[in-house]
Image 1 (cartoon, rainbow, N blue to C red):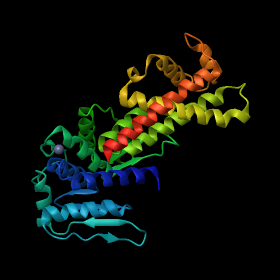
Image 2: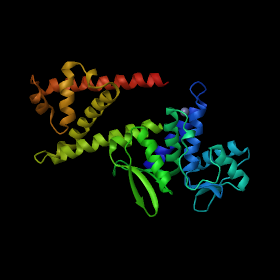
Image 3: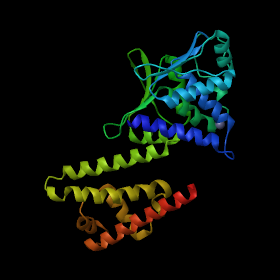
Image 4: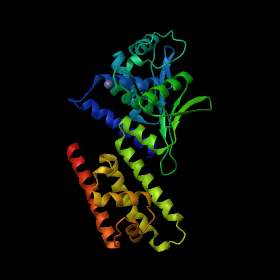
Length: 313
Ligand SMILES: [Zn+2]
């Protein structure tokens, strides 16, 4: 499965579990999610409401939304090439769908109707729907890139404004007549994924980033013995992963004082050996002393992870 497909799968699971959650379920967000999904698929007007996708779950979600609005079962077609498509037949039915989201059908250009985003919570749901309709993300192993492809300029611009209101900073480019808003830096992409509800994908991206970072820095060390390379990278990776997790969840102040300086040094110098790290501390420490403290940090991160999991269950 491509990274894009696994993100979309996580978003669909997230949406379904949100709907099943009787206590925390919010109707406003379902409306916003459905709006994002319909608006950013291929057609959304009186003359055509339709979509095409390789992802069966997204086609089902789309058809179910149409069914909920019109009260009639919406068929899904599957081509020989394995593409799923949904097309709403009948002008009356299509009018009912666009009116559901506050359009009359006589609009000159298609814009985002913010009346469909009732509360702050709805922005994330709307973005999730839009990503399922027109988003892709490249595997972070290759490069950092997440984009939304819109067919109308105004729609793309409005989507960028919505994201700016969420403190995201999207960029714009035109490609093959399509209007694309995108992110290129790993931190923004992590934020977008987290906003939409793809928490595991966001963590996966963070881990890949750390691993790449460690490997690059170690590779740059010319005097390094190749035999030890993999072992060093793996060990440093585990340590950095633990430190990043604690930093992200609790902040650097969470580290007890005797561990904090070492944690900062390790993050800045993934390529250094334990002995070298020990020499850089304000009170120098032996190799085994450094090793002991790094193990403590890894234990702290494990404890954090376990307590999060218990909370989640
Ligand atoms: Zn909401």
